[in-house]
Every structure is written in structure tokens, then in C-alpha cells.
Length: 309
Image (tube, rainbow, N blue to C red; front, side):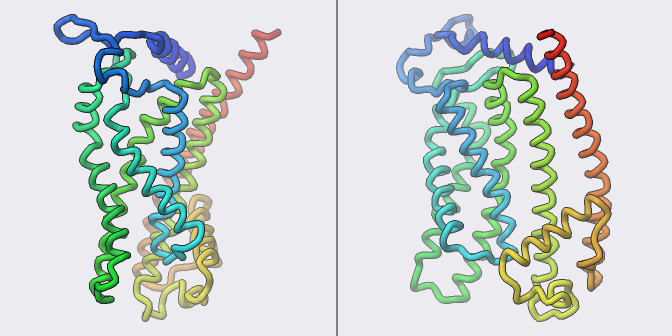
């Protein structure tokens, strides 16, 4: 049923791709797409729009991975520094383009009028995107301020790192982006494969967040000796060594935990208990959804073989 409903929705929406007119207005009028500034509205199913959305999804995943890793104090030069500038410039360029994005109405029709596109963006993501872009460039200004004393610079830098967590809200927009991208996929088998990959991505991202929290709690007080980081002599290890041992601990919680790293104080013990309970529930849901998706892929493959025979 899920495959059939997805295919029906795709056919209904694709039937509107070649329309030269937008949906009817409240007074029954039909507005041509090519009138005035409406010609600059970006078609939601255009190829370059799909490529732009895919690249934005990659950068959102990058932010989801990198921003929490601030707990490990990673080096900000080289590749990480270059990616920081790429994401900053991309989202700055994406901000004005968002005013010109056409969208799909709940009825399946296309809305390609500029005023409607601007109104929708203003009512949804305008304030959040403006705030995030402003914070990105304020961070550049603060880092370039040479006359700021060390204490004020440290406080400002920490505040900006916390505020940058707001950028993770963009992951909510990716549901809409992924729906647009999947509309360009004609194969139900590929769509189901994407569902499986999304489950694996959610598992990894959850483990990533847990790893950053687990390390951040232990390393927050550098003078404390009863932490797993200090007891296991990871305090002076390199960035990747500290990250992957934390990620190993986090992912192992989905399968019952590990003995190599154990809590050493009350705070770590409390976090370990909460994480174990959440991972136990998440593992059950993950296995259930994964089994359902794989079964659907097998059914679609079997139906295709029967039709070809």
C-alpha cells in the first residue's frame, strides 16, 4: 500500500510539472507563470534545483556531524576550515534564492507565483535563516577582532558556538528536500532503498550525538581525575582517537554496551543509564523499521520478476 500510494502521488504531481499556469486563486482566476517577476520563480522539480537541494542536504549532514564535535576541540585549519567557509558561503547564497522557490500545494498543484513563494518563506524559515546567516558572519567578525582581550574573546567564542547549534534546525527542512528529491525517482525499489539508508543514517547520527555528549560530560572539568577520559589516559590522545573511542562506546550501547570504557563517577553513571534505556528502545524501533523496509524491497523485486516472466 505504501508503494502504491507513493507511486500515485508521484504520478499526480508529475502531471503538473509541464503546466504553464499556477493554480487558481481564491476568486477563480488563473495567473500565467510568465507574468512579470513570476518567470524568475524556481520550478520545484527542475534539475538544478534538485542538485542544489542535494548539496544542501550534504551540508546539513556535515553541520550535524561537525557542530557537536566542538566538544572534542577539533583543529579548525585545513579541511575543516575550508568546509566551514564553504558552508558559510553556500547558506549565504541560499538565503536570497529561498524567496524564489516554487512549491507544491497539498492538492498536488504547483505554486509558481513570486508573491506566494515570498509569503510562504516569510511565514516559515525566513527569521531562522536570517539569524543563522547573521551568526555565521558575526563569528567571522569576532575571530578577526584583534583588539579584543582574551577573556572577552573566549566568552564570545563559546557563546557563538552554542548559538551555532541553531543551525541544526535546518535538518527539519530536509524532510521537504528529500520529498522533492524522491519525486524525481521513478523506481519504487530505489525509494525503498533510500528508506533503508535513512534508517542507517539516523542510527549513525544518534551514535554521533551520544558520543559527543559522553565525551563532553567527562572532559568538561579538566581538573577532575575521576572521569573515564582521565582514568583511561585519553586526555592527551589525538582528536580522532578521542572521537572514535567515544563513537565506539556510543554505538555499542545499541547492542548492550562495552567493557573497555565504563563510567567513573555519578554523572557519567547517570548518563550511561539514560543512554542505555534510550538505545534499547531505539534498537527495537530500528530493527522493526529495517525489517519492514527490506521486506518491501523483496516484495517489489518479486513482483518485478513475475511481470518480466
